[in-house]
Image (tube, rainbow, N blue to C red; front, side, top):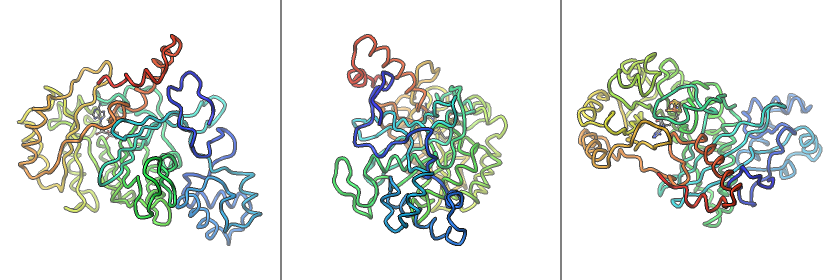
Length: 416
Ligand code: SAH
Ligand code: SF4
């Protein structure tokens, strides 16, 4: 961990894991089995040993969370030394870690630089602890090429796909920071029992449109769900899409995760405005793709997300239309209070209206539909990732320059 320059409002705590040395040796962390096999071949491991060696590395990297080759006691000394000269087990650098009063944590991570002109992409992941689960919200892209009008991520200029390894690394960092490996020690509550992981669920609801980065999201899911490693079953991984219709069936076949659809409107005219991708793939086509989603059943429902925008999409007539539209599709409905950001033209619906809307949905047979906003004081909510941090960092820098400490700044940052 480097010392914090002025643009780092709150450096991660010093008990961090082994840190990346950006630009040095390529890291094996996040690779698929095939990727590890190639790395081993390149390091001179004979072909007949590859399967066995991949199995060993897999266990150390993804089951134990090893941060050095030294720790891999069942791998021969010679091979450990060879690997250490060619590769690292570095994680993305944790630039900042923020902890909300409600226990939500947000990490700003910098990926290793890919060349002399790349400072290293920055992305955010959010951990949301609840009584019966712990959810990690991961990013699939830096920014997003889509331009949903209520989403701040969509206003960012810089966009690139994350590699599968960069997606997986977000969980690795979360496990490091939460002491969430077998035998690990959690920062607050002592030793982690093997049967109980802090991170039990993953949602692709951070930055980016996962179905525009299909192969990498698919490969990452394969690593995340591998029973000999990170072991998050596909039923505990949810992919959220704004509605890339031609990729939905393939997602069911090849990714096999749970599916969430960002619906947000019940009429094409309005959805064209909120989710411009709707002009290409209108509501009827989207719902058809949902009906045909492989593996769909009452036990494996599709979640429909609906952001509550005051006076825009929150009338009771729209609530009734919503349940009518979804009839026959095994579905859950998730009402999301709009998270405002500076410059947005939208407001969050009044609480009474959200309740009345949810009552209509509830009476139609859908349970617990309103998503409680979490981590608001650290701007960890949906649609606020990264771009908010950029703004905050700029503001924090100004304040530091004018002599106000970053700590004081963050204490007062919860203005929404
Ligand atoms: N691109 C994917 C996944 C990332 S967005 C998608 O659009 O589904 C995750 C969820 O947050 C989506 O349902 C999105 O519509 C919602 N969202 C975006 N901005 C929001 C905001 N400002 N307030 C509330 N929800 C928002
Ligand atoms: Fe992209 Fe999703 Fe935001 Fe739309 S809501 S701009 S698809 S991240």
